[in-house]
Length: 557
Image (tube, rainbow, N blue to C red):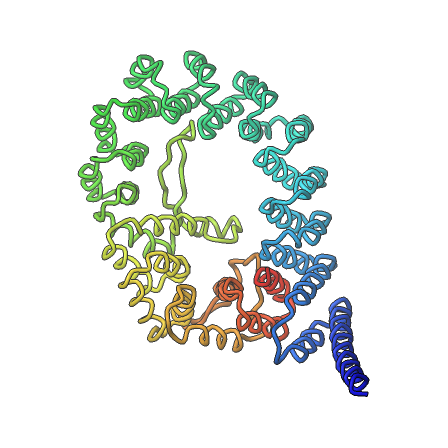
């Protein structure tokens, strides 16, 4: 009898457990059904209720996110398609390939390019097949981009696909192809490079020489040397650059002859080549050209240690362009004498001028010009193209001594130079010194400017510094208005809708900050962060859900 009672008890317990499992499975199915039906808020609410007091079910979260992204990818709304591709890309996961493949079939070029970009970052057996599929796109930019990625990955069918594409296109696009064949490095690709070296189009020949140099194809040096006597000015410049880059001094006597050329570009390129091939006496001749205000020579000095005094003299020039390029070269040489001019470049001048690179005829030498920002507005260019240059200069300043670097950062915050603040914060994180942390803490606690305060708190959270930084981020996300929408393209004409003053954020700043906040949370991969992201997906503007879904997948890997 006792045995029978025990059996009954076990049976009851078993039935209760089975009922719980069945109920849980039913909940999961219903949640997924709601997601398929685009009832996202209901599905998320049911998920939160079901796992309120239990560990989160990561598998169901991934499935929900994938359904959301797939629905967005199949949407007829182009913006939703692009945001879905962005979300799938943010997931950094091979499980998003199915969604990215949908993007390749889109009738919108930008959606295709977004999809292709993220596909190229994933290592999966299916990636090669999708790149081949992208080569059949109706859009030429997609096919050219796919060709680049195929060459980069040394795709087994790359040479045939690239050759076929090249044959179908107008001659003026041919200079795009030498770099692809140089990347491939196969015997068949090398045969094409040899043909390109003798092509009737001078741009093709020049691009071939530069590709051989930049991709370290020293197996082709003998062919480069043979070209020197009958080459154009641009080609001679590129050949000297190649010999220098690949450390080939076998025809050094020929280079010496050209170092006294009456053609300045050839002379300067030959002098640079001789210097880097071991003839350090050529530094004097290059400095002489720099003191004669040759901007290419000033730029070349950035790679010549010991030229700091010459560059410091040029900082006193009345010509602003001379001062700017001298300061940039001093920065490369890690000399803090550049700081005052650098502050002007990064802060004062950025309000009405843009930095623009200007290349020599052979495209191996470059200096920076200052052009009015108004030119880009007239041309309807959507962002200040010099921002990336200024960010790169700021990053290079990290190599200066700490006090000088921090004085530059302080000037950016005091201005405030809003477009550089995210980069400045990231560099302080990277520095991670006691002074940098104290600076961030001060800004996190006392800055009256939201962008600075928000990013400082975010940086301290990412650095795992003890403090209320996780709560700050959680509250920031909770308090975001539904009208903050992640935007992949910002129209500069609408930037003026921003801010009446420095105490509010532009749409662009809000987008970047929102993404940075969520990326930080998803990187932590703990239950608290996941719950914050789930709540945000439920509450946020529907347009933002796709990017957040991608981060949720990333956080649950």
